[in-house]
Length: 190
Image 1 (cartoon, helix red, strand yellow):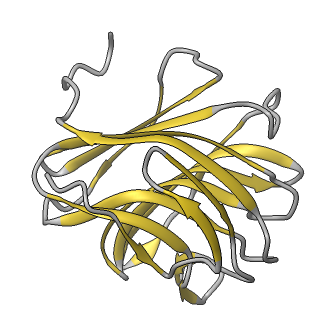
Image 2 (cartoon, rainbow, N blue to C red; image 1 turned 135 degrees about the horizontal axis):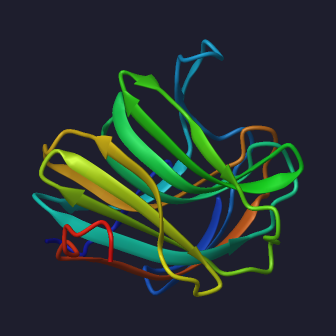
């Protein structure tokens, strides 16, 4: 697997690499396709590397969540109409672990993190096994928690960091230790 990363919609303010990357989002950035809101957006920031077959990607991050829909995490992307974004999304005054799966149209699932704060280290792990993607998360080093198991194409794709701020610009995020490597074991219940 390649470790060459490149930007999709590079932010005006970013520095670093896969080891540590700091960015501030541009104004009104997002990834979304149609469902419920009726609009299509594909201008969020993503720092991606090509992937084929099975793999696991993981990263830890912190964000200065303040405005509705501030979001950061990982993205798996085939094209504008086929992708997954997952991580923290700020909604209803609270950090939520969020997963959006888009196969033509976007869906959205959230897990409220009632005790989480922007000072917490959040880690997300995305694993593709054939035509399924498993999404897991951890807050401050807790054991991995399953957030989603979703069908998704096994086509060649790209994976990496993602950040958006649909309601503003200047959402600041620090990502650390992005790693893309062999898929973890398929056992869901360790």
